[in-house]
Image (tube, rainbow, N blue to C red; front, top):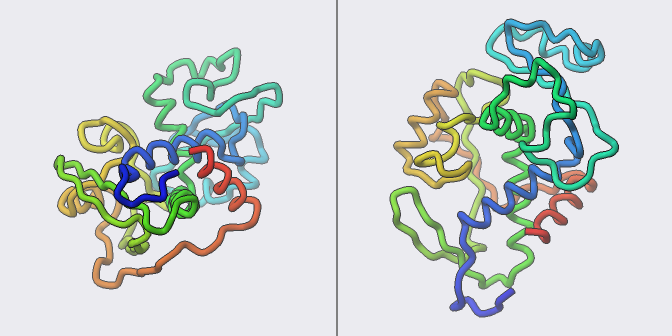
Amino acid sequence: MSTNPTDSPLDLYNISLLLNYERASTDPRFIHARLRHVVDASTPLSTPVAAIVLAPQWIVSTGEKDGFIFEIDTSASGPDLPSNMLPSPVPAALNRLTPKQLESIYWQTRDHDGCYQSIALLQHFFDLYPIDVSLRVRTCGGKDFITPAFTRVILELKLIRPKRTTITYFGDAGRGLGGRSTFALESLDAFYKRMATVALSADTKNPKITPRMRPAPDDVDAWLKTAAKRA
């Protein structure tokens, strides 16, 4: 790590891709979890019975919904990726899933609470560097600028009438500008256009601004610090 702020700055885009990979592939909730069952609103979540007991929201929710049942493979090793998420042999009902669909399911499940985890992970990553380290921010429009990495705040906007309890943007439209990746910095106009697909609007007049994310539980915080060091 460099202590000279005039050296090559950290690149936010590259950092985000690395941190997203480390967070998703080592998520303690899904260590060696293999996908066994996929259902939607038209399909009853019938097996196993425990899934219904532990997830009553599935029964009471009458809107759009997706359900995924995973089983831990105790013999597996290595990072967990979309390419190894299916068990062997592959259940007949899951043979229809394309690699792109598997990737969407992979992010859809791991992105629960992902916004808070990602911010905490970014904080831990920057904590590994000197306070005067600089950061390059590249935008979708092709422009970029350099800023001190420690000059930042967290901005939270409350969604008005969200269409789902957990909202994330999946599929081709969720891959950023041009479908190149799962991370992109975009204009406010593009942000509001995306927002209209998942909620009525966002409350931009009453944002919550904080300098730093509150500490996570000790076990989660230890995992995030380890992921930051690997990145």
